[in-house]
Image 1 (cartoon, rainbow, N blue to C red):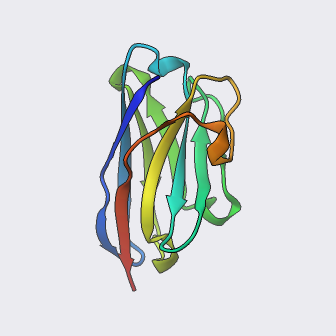
Image 2: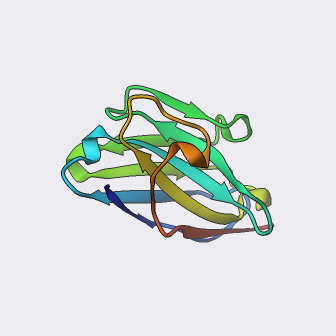
Length: 124
């Protein structure tokens, strides 16, 4: 299993930007599809964006298309989530998740490795 650590969360005003990072440990990181999930207060964890092992394929939740961009740098063992035009409803904990697979899943059950999460708070 790969270990994942998120960073980059914080407090930002509506309309602002943040870049989250998910750094992996372990030599098999490049075999892993990685996704970001968002958990708003009192709600279930929801898929935000995912990227395949080499960055060649990405997919997004409809609610974030055009505002969030996922990318990865395998040399740095890191996946990024660039978040622009942030809204109050983007507030919550963001988790990165990984699974050693070619297909990028979209549900929590598709992933076996999880980070501890990073808090994003968007003030309106």
